[in-house]
Length: 355
Image 1 (cartoon, rainbow, N blue to C red):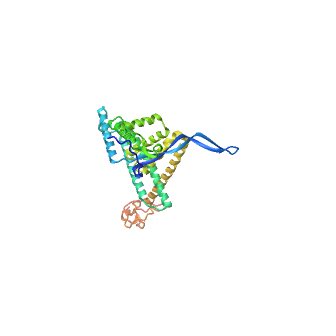
Image 2 (image 1 turned 45 degrees about the horizontal axis):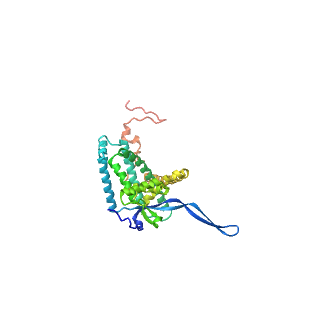
Image 3 (image 1 turned 60 degrees about the vertical axis):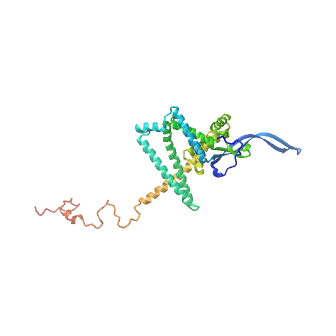
């Protein structure tokens, strides 16, 4: 059902948005400068100057009705791909399963180990976040440990992404993959909003139109215009939407972590030296925090395994030296009397009495 085009979009509450961010918009505007000449008369000079202003961008939090529309769109695109002759992911997966799977046994074990490590780190991070600590060294220690865990989790996700990329390459030409790419684009077209100064500062959809085709035409028009700030905004929206759709970002904190790596990617082309320097600084900070975490865990293990720990009563002693301190001499035991022993040094051999 077509929407009312004349309906005015009101400014939404903050809870309406999954995430908000800004991109720099550079334009040329006429600027007038006033000065005085030697005789004291005012002289006005107007010229065009480059002006940079922030463009506010908003990622909409979808309601149930919009989610239903997206699921219907995915189903239609999936059926369209099957009708066109594409195989489904389940059929290809069944064939690979019969042949032993996509990955070797060693690769499967490595991937499972990464999953387990990621789950443990996520659990430990959650425990740190809910733990209340006072300002000071204790809070600083907790924050450092959290930073180390976050860095390690990012490294694990990157390694897991290598496996996922290999898996996706196998299923890239399936009806499922085609439908997924289509629905992610559908979400980008429907969740992307900006604050438009030409509309009186109202928050309006970035892509104009009421239907998918109309919004897609608007997307294509932006690509043809090749406006730098719009290109960056579109890339941001696609990036954030993809992470949200795959369940990797839903809170502002998670989106902020995604944006850190996105900013590094964007700035690399414009100022590679400065970007590389900042990236290395961030990596060093994270590595140091991770090192502190590992040292703390190692120290804790040493304490737990230390021999100086007081053992509870009744615990058995190590069996490396079973002979008690006040045990009788071996020569006084019955076994020793019947056992020939080598003579001690400087001792005299006694003749056998039976000889």
